[in-house]
Image 1 (cartoon, helix red, strand yellow):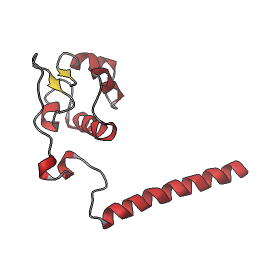
Image 2: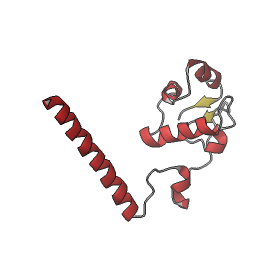
Image 3: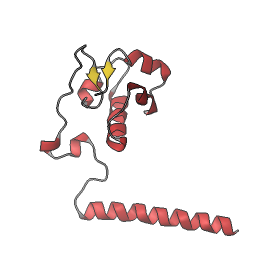
Image 4: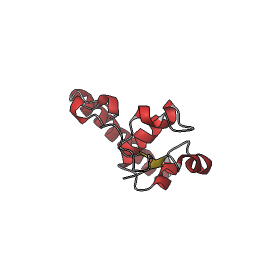
Length: 117
């Protein structure tokens, strides 16, 4: 019984912290989640650089550029941007497999078209 009470207390505290953050963001007029659309105009990402061999830099690519990759639609492109916003720049192309919806097969299809700088 003690373990379940501790778990319930921990869940209540976590939920309270979450609500406090949401309330604070709302009072400050800040968005709950940061996306490219909610950034101020002067911090919009620059168009992606391409490597000398023409591959797209995943760390600078915009949504519009990502959807032009084979097998990448709007939803998957947004997941890549969200992953990048949450965890920072990708260190390797292989890290792209951490994005939900990108498995081994899709990663292999993309490898010739993308790079990270």
